[in-house]
Image (tube, rainbow, N blue to C red; front, side, top):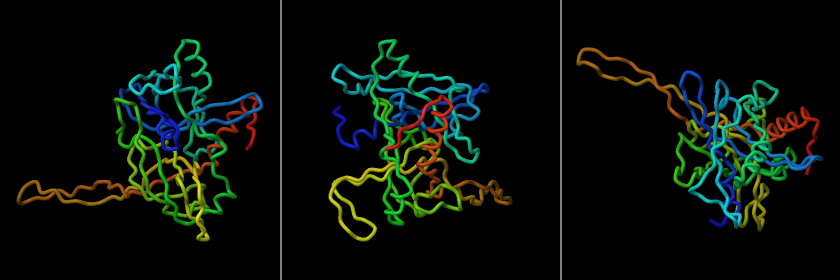
Amino acid sequence: MDVTSIADQLYFVTVYINAADDNGNTWTGTGFIITVDTRQGVANAVITNKHVVDGATSINFRMHKKDNEGKPILTQTVNIAPAVSDVIGHSDKDVDIALLPLGPILNDLHDKGEKVFFKSIDASVFIDHLYEGTLDSIEEIIFVGYPGGVYDSVHNLPIIRSGHTATPIMIDHNGTPRFIIDASVFPGSSGSPVFILNQGNHSTKNGDFVQGDRFKFIGVLAAVHLHESTGRIEVLPSSNIVSTFNQVMDLGIVFKAKLVLECIDEWLAANGHKRIEN
């Protein structure tokens, strides 16, 4: 597979995270790879949600192998099982973002002769406060991940879904650095990166028509709004049992991109490094 366009590359920025605890419970989530420049060189990390790894005693994910031409081998992967203790959470307990350093993993794979293929989200495409102000109150978005654990298991490729913003990105929803998207979000999508992607052209807030691609990373999907409904299950002709159940509202909670940079900066500072801002 030739991976050339932005859309092509998006299929290789995420990893399918499997987590387990000592009681035999297992669950899944999404992680995605970011790249930042530091004075010491390039740093790579996997970003996910804290709740994807909280309580886990083991986690693992897979990466595609790479052929001699530098292309991904879709049906061949390398299994990676990092230590849960290596995961670093954002210092704010209410920010559901965590980071796993990828550099040591890549170095270990290299030492073992394993060549892996991946793409990453560069800090240069992270949205900032100034760019937020240029956006309209409703913008089309896409997000990449593994909703309900669904993915192409033969080729190890994620699912890309779409929707639109349900609250303006430039406004902190309920006074917190989050916004809401209107999209079909399911467990397993936790940790999915959310983007604005317009290929070829796009319109601006003031109605101008701009030629060219627009690609911005805008945040991390963390949760979905649920609505509790009441249903009636008839057990016998003379008796009824009322049951409650949760119904997905197709509203996802997204933590803003700047919080990922904060988590990255905390990690780098703890190691005596500093990110070079673009």
